[in-house]
Image (cartoon, rainbow over all chains, first blue to last red; front, side, top):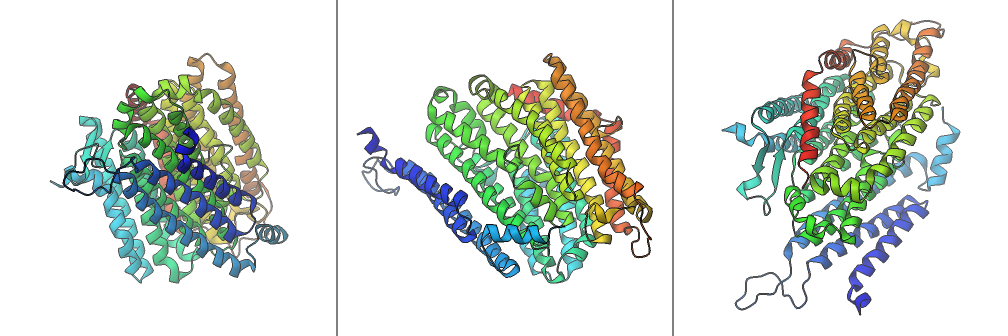
Length: 119
Length: 492
């Protein structure tokens, strides 16, 4: 039961590892960004899960309701989502410019081109 | 009236000026705005340091919300000093940036450049000033995103891949910090660093806190380019525009080391960090190996900017060495070296910026005999290089002196010897540039003239600071010593 009760956190760990693996193992810049996104998303889920209370409702003032979820982690993660979107945008913009400068978004190709006219 | 709002003005002024900069179309107007804002932040930082030295820590509550609920800015000796470093380096380098940026960057993008600069400054100052753990993450990302932009603005296409590489690693680092903060929040229910420190002891023995500690240390280690997490740094420094390299070398890694200090000492406390998690035992060998291997790597570089970048990683090692000694003297050395290395590296990278301005590259092969054509620039490099090595009367000497004192205090002769021997390695890599510039033959100086005064004056200003604070170290050692005591004493 213990393991099942931590279902969200297992998913967080799984997503995080998949994301990190893609970032490390993939040579394609776009795929790297996808991996990075996955990695960040897992942290979003971590924060969101953290705010949940068993049986809790939405944190709105209602007569007779005393058990509600903690809204703070949700607010925090809104900020982090914005940061994630900005990072993705900058990363993709860089990938576009790399493509126009090198004609490729494969890391190996880029390294080779740098090597061949390295100084 | 305004004086009580100084802690927040420090961050808000560059934040508001950034977007305004984007709207201005004339490069000179962009530069004037950025430079004046940067000098204003420097003035605020000086005022804050004076106030902190007179009356102790300043606590500023944002929007008047009291601490554990609202965000507070807490300025004590440690971060007042770091604020001074960041805003000081930015102010001087901006004087330098005007001509250098006009030469290196597409004129249509100059407004973007200065906007990025101001946002980067905002992030760095915010990270330093804030007393809220989540706020640290937000400002960290503001400065990081601005930094990726600044690096990628260099026309060399290798700058793009360097920026991309940094983006990937920087994001992983920042996300690690975010995870660490999440786990701490989970255990304590608070984000305020002082409040966290108070709520931590009852749960300090749990595995969650230990995991949070590791995530935070590794995340900050990536941002600080601590060996072996430094892979992004050499290319990012080498291919960024000259002014940006001078800024980053003086500020970005320094603020990350400051964060490490803040989390290790103010939040977890030396007891937890060193006695339970044994971080000093891990940091010490890594720092030592980092200093030696990166100094050796610097010797084998063929471009001067990359050589200095590798040397930067080695110098971060000295700061980590100071932390790993886990003593007040060691910490004093770390805080001193934060300041001193910022002066040294920004001066050296500005000298390299002068070289790039005239010959377009810092390849050692193209720098042959350059001292005949650019005597003042190369003299600045030699003067800064002496400081990097740690010759007496320079700031580099002061930090190494304290580091050796701290090592001897522990009775570790070998560590003192290591500091001296690695200084010899610094002699070797500085000499490589000096040898090429002074003792190689150059056909003629027909097409290469001395750098213009607008570049030389800021460079020499920074060099002068190197020698001024090397001769009269009472201010820096006084503040650094007090900061170290505070960090140790603030332990729960």
